Length: 344
Image (cartoon, one colour):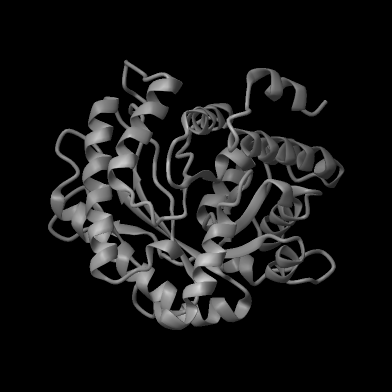
């Protein structure tokens, strides 16, 4: 890791550069099939390539997008003219990234809870991904909230796996996105979400330090502190922003260059509004950025619907969402801006 220290720190800072965020385009083929079928498009290797090509080739996307997380299939694909996606992204000033976990699987001895797998053979896979052009990676640990969960065991094992992944990434010269996601599904209150996020972040940073992960060379991708989606009392935008920042100020070391929040199934506009509110509050030692999947892709996917004639309009929809979130990085997003930028 020592030999890569300067490159890791530089890349991590670029990933959370002012006014920019990360496009999460790392959906598995199974997930992508569901998304494509929702707009009546058959999921094939080519249809998945076409949609991602549409996103990656959007004009001026690099003004608001610093990096793209890809899936294994995607990092091996190319643009219509045959340019490998990682090479094409680099030519646009966008950093190529790769999802390296193999998904959440049942955690032995903890009914209803999961552990993210993918550590076996990870050193070798990271070396290959680095050769393919990836300079950062993503691993998602999943923490679910209900009446009995999560257990301390589940939190601890996922934190340990995240740190092991992080150390291996840095050994390979790849910046790890550390993603401990406390799911927003369920009826839990914002207070319970805050308590579980607190415990999760404490465990994660203890493991990162124990396993000698360079904090200056990571990007944290956490959930916002929010009410469960089915909770009858939904916290407002300002409360979410205040609680999230209050908690993170206590737990996230200043050495971390940036926090790229996940959208977690929020609507496009709500995810942007929350990010905007946090940046308006500010007074934090790290960049407050975004790493959104559905919140950036849902609109262009619906517009595209598999039709070549819709590509330009779909790219406009994607550029619109990227720009809105780019403005939220400065606390300049508003409903007026949302309407003004909406493509005709």
